[in-house]
Image (cartoon, rainbow, N blue to C red; front, top):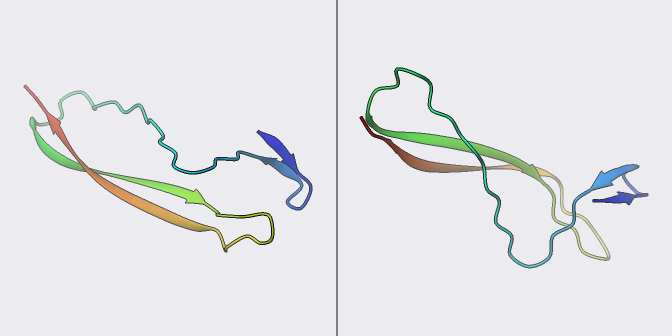
Length: 67
């Protein structure tokens, strides 16, 4: 985390490729089956000269719930 004077807030900075891990829980009584988990991330790409407009990116991942 670092303070960004342009945005007046703390921001996280990543270079190159990045991987995030998200812990999820299955609700009690969920039916055993394969379900689609949709994850949304709000992000913005910048370099040392400009920032692209922020956008929300979505990823859909199949999750199998066993017995």
